Length: 331
Ligand SMILES: [Zn+2]
Image (cartoon, rainbow, N blue to C red; front, top):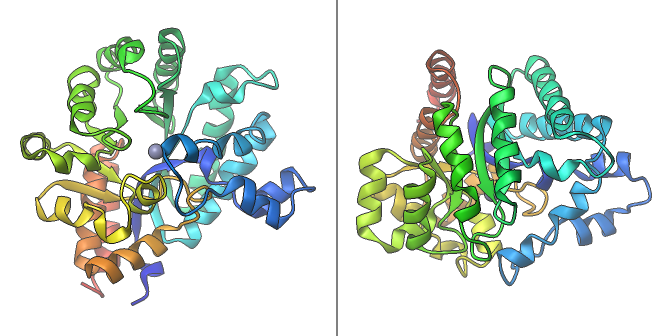
């Protein structure tokens, strides 16, 4: 089966973990392909999420000017185009891109403009999610969520919290999520990756996201699964990334098939195209090989992801029609 041609939706994708060698070579010509592989791509098996998180700073160092941010955004859209993606939400933490003097607002404006341009050029619909990070302060989180509000009506569409779930508590970020809800800003949150169901419960209670980044360890708590299903909370699942960060030992151990069979709203994502060294097409091939997933599984995941997307209903419907049309010949 030709998985490349299947229309794909990707909601969980970190801009700063997805630089192709082509764009790195353009921005830092001295970096050889071998160096790129060693420094930008993490091993297929890291000891932990914290180990995995040592790679993104290599990319972030190359994302400090408006021109760099523009090139890297364009580069990612080219990767998405080759992968058959029709709708993507890219996420990044604006406050990490101010080392060369850009103001956080300028960072977002540069990525936003490049995204809007890429949407026009490629026909891929795209939105941006601005991330706060677990180790950030309350003030940094509030600054980030206020940027989402300031860019309302552009391709900036939502708010997220990322980084080391196991290493830092939620307390500093409760105010930012409260602010997001008061301002009507869509939210997702990383949880249930480096920690188990207790982390997902506290994330739901204090952050109130409509989606969870990963959320896969919810499988350990039947009451939590029932809650997620009842409230239609969407799981942005990234199987290969979870194997890499050692959440699960091997692909067959991953709970994506069980979550799907349990009737949850599940989507398929790469998380980090470079750091994890994976495309969505390759992820679909693995799901097909390991769990026997067929086009109707991928169709259901893509439609579930679109339902959970941070876009207006009218666009959701247009994208849904486009995805269904793309699967018509194979389902
Ligand atoms: Zn992530």
